[in-house]
Structures are given as C-alpha cells and as structure tokens.
Image (cartoon, rainbow, N blue to C red; front, side, top):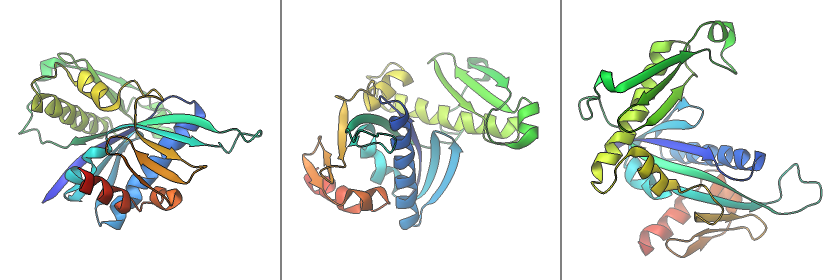
Length: 231
C-alpha cells in the first residue's frame, strides 16, 4: 500500500554535536528511502516527506529520542560525548480528511534567512502558522513564495492534528509529540548509537546490531528486521 509519512528530525541535548547527529539521521533515512525506491521531498530544514510502499508502517517505530555516543570531530582530547536527536513520524493527511477552520489559524510572515538568494532575503516569503486551539506552531521558509511555504506548513499541521485525533487520550498535539520524543534528554532514549563499540541498541525491544556506519549509510534493514521479529 502506497503511503506518505512526514518525518521530523530535530537536535536534542548536546549542542553542535546534537545538530550533526540530527543531520546524520536525516541522511540515513533519505538513503534508506532511496534504497527502497521511495520518493523523498524536503519540506523544511527539519521535515521531509517520504512516499512509497508501506512507508508509515515501516518507519513509525523510529519515533523517539535517539542517543549517540561518539568522539566529535571537534574534540581534541579524544573524549566520548553523549548527545541526542529526536525523531517523529507522522502520516500525511489531505485537507479532505482534516478540515481546519481558517479562523483558528494565526499566520505571520517574515523574511527568510539563510540560503535562497536575494529574492528570499528582501521579500517576506517565510510563513509561521499557529493553530490556536492546539497551540502547535510550524514555520516554513525554504520555498521562494509565501504561498508554497504556507502550504507546506499546513501539511505538517494537518498531520499533527490527525495524530492527535487518532488517540482520544491525548489532549493536544504538543502532548502527543512529547510522548513520542520526550524532552530530548539523554535518559529518554529509545535507541543508542554507540560508536566506540560499533553497536546500535534498541532499548524498547532489547535488540542490537553492529556495523553502525553501514546502518547510518541507509542500510536499516538488519535492525528493522530484528525489531519486527521481536515485536
């Protein structure tokens, strides 16, 4: 079954090293998707849209805090640092499935920063949308037009609201996201990436695999297969 998932990856605790690890995870999921013939589209710097056979079913267990233990490239003393990144996997939903009242949206525009050229810098193309009933806020600035950034932000908001509605015990999107990724603390991990021992351990299912660099290069299958068998 063809599915589309919205993947959110953010740096957690650990400063610059956490940001580097988040980038490593993004690259890993993108390569894994390419290996499977899935289509990957970057929505914004922290979000990607992945479409293909059983995408959401395959990736949904990736949600949570990922802890990394390694020697950063900037570490001169050779000390091992512990950092985290958070992953959230949300199903993409259409406007027909989730109808959002425009009166419930607070929309702000601002000038985009970073890459994009002079047009992006001089015109207020970036968009920040807040869904007032839930308080969820999404900002998009990577597209050259305000309309495109608005549509991307609404895609993510719909996905988060849909997830909230699927579980009646949740009272808001932020609460759902906190349950998925916690506070991004080092102790709130679902998985540890231990570089010195060349081992990845999934703490929920009690499984481990080696060859860490190959997994980070997109070869997630050995780990996912062990998780599936244990689950």
